[in-house]
Length: 146
Image (spheres, one colour):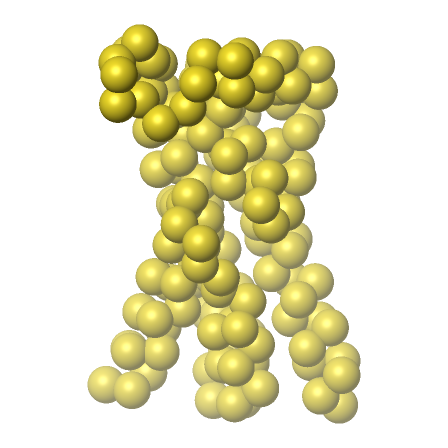
């Protein structure tokens, strides 16, 4: 039961961290890695899948967010939304390789949805970025641990 709880906690923290919520998953991954009680491949797979799924939720939100743009309650001004869209047009889909970055990565996945980025390209680039980030974090953690 403890194993399931640890895996579920890691998955949910990774999923939440990829949304626009101010959460992080790195501490959960590092703690589980340092415990040496769980296989590396399982931790990397769960963290990556959770984080990719959270980014997919942002993309889906972005796809439908545009429909509500002119509502009074809409949380982003037209100017700010146009600025984000211009940034995405300027730097292109390759910018999704930076979706792992704190602060800018999550809104970037939302803007990709608004801009109508194709799902397969989105998933490919975000999966590469998110999985590589967790792999580097694991390598650094296990390298420092000895």
